[in-house]
Image (tube, rainbow, N blue to C red):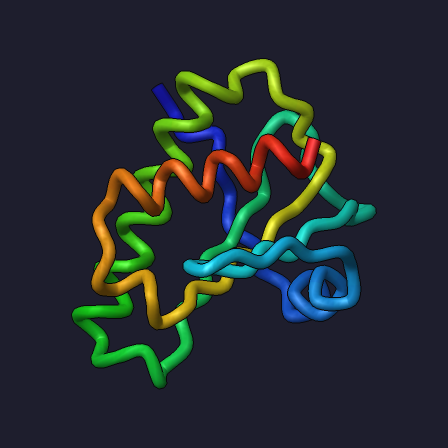
Length: 115
């Protein structure tokens, strides 16, 4: 089965999302909003990890975890979710040393709040 997740690619999309609404918690900040030229059949989401969090291995580990959580969420929890919004997820340093299950729980709780 093909993935229903697509990453943002245009610099303008990132800039527009940073001007939109946001939700923040201990592990990450989620910017979300509607983009005009978006495919409503797929989830537009990008994951950003700043360089100050750690070396490339740690940053890629965080991005892998986030992608895995969102793939599970799209398959199980959000199959009938409205894909009108685009998301920009920016990780914080606290995410590196915490367990996968805790991060997954908080991320999914935030996505339920966004509805």
